[in-house]
Length: 290
Image (cartoon, rainbow, N blue to C red; front, side, top):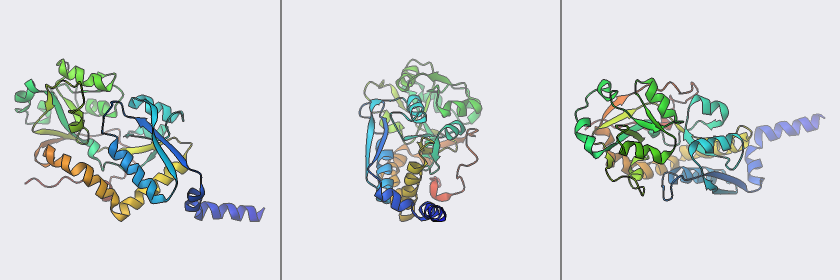
């Protein structure tokens, strides 16, 4: 009995890396992109490959058979069906229902928002000089997105859509005045087929609230979560995480002229107290204005 107990302790303390190395091929399935040609999956998939390669395990990473809206993907993950990893903006409910890997994969950029507007509204937006004035305009968001609750808690009257593509239609029909989009998403979204060409990038404003995009795993699969967390941490330590991040996002940030925009700060009541806000390695810092 004592020999069995000693062996168990040895495996638990020192055997994680050897266990994952000797395991069979890890089958890892993530949600297929909602729109054909959508490049927003490129960076998370590349980062996931980077992290897994840092661990030395054998794995197969593939999209789900069917396209999934974010809400469905999170439900399927919670039920341990179809997918076993999802990346998403976090909130307290998601962190309760799922297993978060608390390393912000986009270094907080998900909380930096610029606006899509109808081109006819740029003159009106050019006159906005305060958050109080902006709160008189109506944003559009998905009905089950954390951003919707964040905006509402900060005094905005939010128009909601049941699907991702419907958000653009609402904006086109002037049922909403602006569509706050993350700096990591917005430029690629302007290139999506069938988006009204009158929807354009607003020129001078931004919103910021503390937020993180995490990889989420089903709570019954802590070994996979630990595997990915280990790989991400190794990538942070050797600098390859930052290299991938800068290669993907530095050109976008420069093109958006984020550092020169007027940015209004919002509170995020959905953030967990376990968010690693004090770890400077995990977060993007906006350069000073020129």
